[in-house]
Image (cartoon, rainbow, N blue to C red; front, side, top):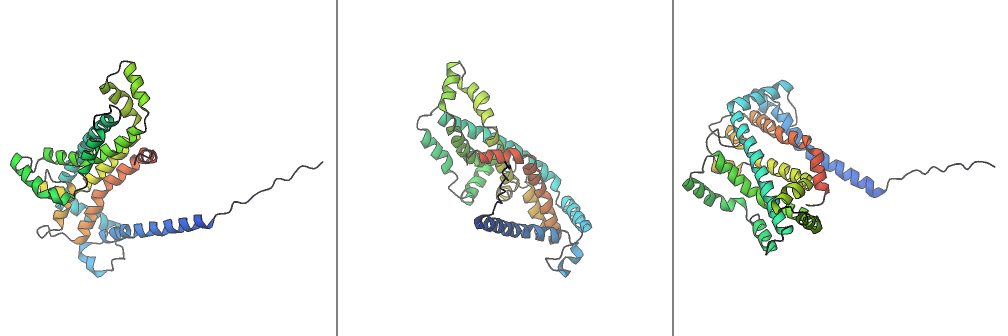
Length: 285
């Protein structure tokens, strides 16, 4: 009696998988082209910037020199500190307010909850440019113009609707029996929110925080409209001053500064990549 020879089956890659991988590779290369152009031109020294093609890179010394020049001339350190404050405080407040709104609508079953949800989310329908002038007038008349408190306030208000939208959808996936069981055990709604619902929604909170912090860090429009001094204006607004008539910085210096101020968001994403991916995979978006 002879032993049966195991049959080895070779897995074949379907044409659809191959096409998808090729398309993704092409899209990846297209996405990397602007990044390469940024690095190539930011590494050129200002005195030879116009002598070479935009596709020809400079050297590492030129990149470091341009970064140092942009950091010192644009006083980006002050803007970086202010923006770090805005990008931490405002998303944190917005996440808490949005989570509380979602908890009230879903768990507490707030009367006319869907109406309040639509009312909160409707504020995202109007373009930001439509409210700049009323916002500027209101800030100037109340003393919030060119203050860190005013910047934190406006960034928080803008971030709340998206946070409420995501958290309301996330809490809808939690069985209401969880809330009822906690009430039977004698827990108050406030305790249920802090001790049960918030810990369960940790990945979603992290994902929202990262998205909103990235938006605030990269904001230019509100920074130019509602701030003026170097100690209050965000770093992107400070970077734009390098390119103005009075800044007088070379394009390579401005590009190096842009590359420099974008590093914190990259570090933030890499540091929280696992939690961010988990939050996205939960399907609450």
